[in-house]
Amino acid sequence: MTAQSTLYIGLMSGTSMDGVDGVLADFGGKAIRTIEAAFVPFPAALREQLMALQAWGDNEIEREAVAANQLAACYAECVEALLPHAEGPVRAIAVHGQTIRHRPDLGFTRQTNNPALLAELSGIDVIADFRSRDIAAGGQGAPLVPAFHQAQFGAAGQTRVVVNIGGIANISVLHADGRVGGFDTGPGNVLMDGWIARQRQQDYDADGAWAATGQVNVSLLQALLDEPYFKLAPPKSTGRDLFHMDWLDARLKGCPDLPPEDVQATLTHLTALTIARGIHQQASDVQAVYVCGGGAYNATLLRELAAALGGTATVESTAVLGVAPNRVEALAFAWLGYRFNQREAGNLASVTGAQGARILGALYPA
Picture 1 (tube, rainbow, N blue to C red):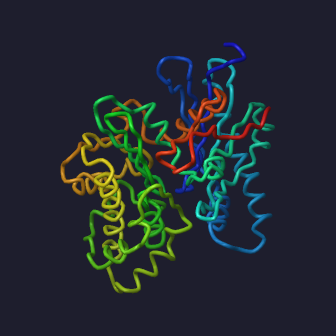
Picture 2: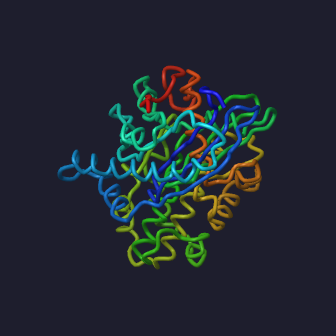
Picture 3: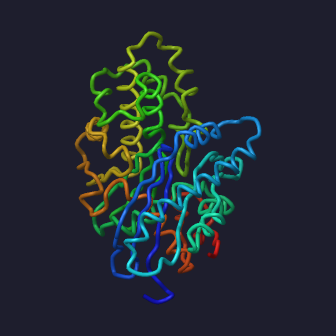
C-alpha cells in the first residue's frame, strides 16, 4: 500500500443521536469494498447534552465546545475499533459531526465536532465540515447522500429510490435516465423515538411492535400533515429545529385523551405517508425502493410504506444491494472524503439547489 492509500474511514452520527457508526472502506477497485463496520454508543450524559443543544440555552458556546471534545473521543474510539482490520494505512477519516442546528434559510448549518482533536487522537488526516460549502453556494447543505446513492445503487434503465430513515427521512430519486433528485421528506424516527421514550422509557419502538398495537387517528394525522413544510417544493431540508416533541405536543392539544399506542401508530403512519408522497411526486415511474438507516429495521414502518406506495414498487432493505442499512450513511461520508481528496464534487445541485457542483469538506492534517 502506497502513500496514496485508497482506504478511508467514514464516521456518521445522525439525528437519532444514539452513537457513532463507522465504516472502513477501500476505494481502489471498480466497486467500493466495505471491509469492516463498528458502532460506538454515546454515553448517556453526552447524548443528553447533545439533545439540549438542539434548542437555545444558557452558556451554549462552552457547552458545545465540551460536547465536541467528548464527541471526538467517541469518534476516536470508533476509529480504533476499525483500524485492526485495515490492510494498510488509512488515507483519511471523513467525519460528519453532530448536527445541532440546520438553518439553511439563515445561511448556516452547525455540525458540532472537533476534527483537530480527532486528528491528534488518531494520527490520521481528518476531513470534516462537508455541508457548509454547499450552503455558501446557495444550497440547502442537505441531503448530501444522493450523489453517493447514485454511485453505489444507481442502475441504468431503472428508476430506483433510496430512502434513508434516520431521525429525519430523506429520499434519493435515481431516475432511469441518470438524473438524480432528492430531499428531506420530514420526520423519520425522531417523533416515534421521542414518544416511546416518554411513554415507555424505551429508546425506540423495536420492529414497530408497539405501533402495531394501535390505530391511526385520522384527526391527529391531519393535524400533523397541516405542517407547511410538507407542502414546500424541493429543494428542501429539515431537522430537529422543526420536528421535535414540542411540535408534536402542540398538535396533540387538539386531540386529547388518545391512547398512547394510537399516537405511536399515527406517527409511524406519518413517516410512511410523507415518504410515499415524496416518492410519488418525484418518481411516478419508480420500480424499486430500497431503505437504509434505523427505520429499515422497523417491519411495521416498512409495511406502512409499501401500503402507502400502493404496490407500485417493491420495498426492500439496501442489504439486497450489498450494503447493510446501518452502514450506508457512514459509507457515504467515507465516499465524500475520497471525493475530497480526488478534488471531485460531492454535492448535486439538482438536489440541494446550490449554484453548482462543489468540492465539499475541510482538511485537518495529522
